[in-house]
Length: 385
Image (cartoon, rainbow, N blue to C red; front, side, top):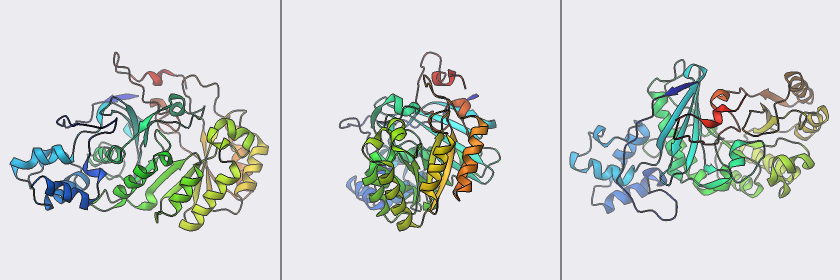
């Protein structure tokens, strides 16, 4: 594990806030909204496009680098359009620098984490949609911490833009210098912050200067199964991948592992997922954490296979990652291989997820946004693997 220098942050003038939400940022607005804001400041509306091109197109937020703007207005426009949302606290790296976890402090002191993962053919960032999580899944570090608050649209987008800048700098050796994929699998339940997450997706996929210009098909939205929100997502005319955190094929166990199942049972959740697949043509990713002697029995593999056979679905088996205080452990590899065999024999496409970032508590289920201000080390990282 390697500690890396902090990503530079540009300070912003204090801004009045209501409740705990941050100051308005250009990523909270579409281009027309930004133009109206700039015009209200007495500036030509096209200045909004210029600043947006710097932020989304060049990944620049330092007003002194915006040399196409009059020097007298750079700071003023940056203060109004680019207030600081994420203050870097710490960045950790593993996998020879290909996996990097960033811890951010928000304007109100809340902490969130996001993870950059470099591969030979792509760069992916895993971003958070909430500070903490209210879904209370007992095997997930974020769920154990509880919910602090929803993130704003711009706080969500800014994670991707920051880490896109890291990729563009060439810091991730052996990977392309451009962010290509975003997964909403960080802290929080994305569909519990529905409106802001959808707005963030639209910023991520719109071309510059409107947004970051990613492919919709390279965006994945994870959910524990909020059925009304899944059905609403299907009507958004978006081609993003839906990732359903199922973790058990039977209601008795899923009621314990995913407490929201007490409201929407397995059959209802899967029905909504199949409707999403039918309306979008996108294969649903079924996320399944493999937990030793809990959900890894052969009969559960067979039941899952029957539920998914013939459906537009792919199973992502996730070796359980260690979290502080958890009483559970990952399934042994022979058990995992047998689970995979039974699913594939049922005709269900299945893979085992790469556990990238485990050493820095950056793997699935490990994000807890712990801050140790005395030692500047990740206390959660002291948990044994």
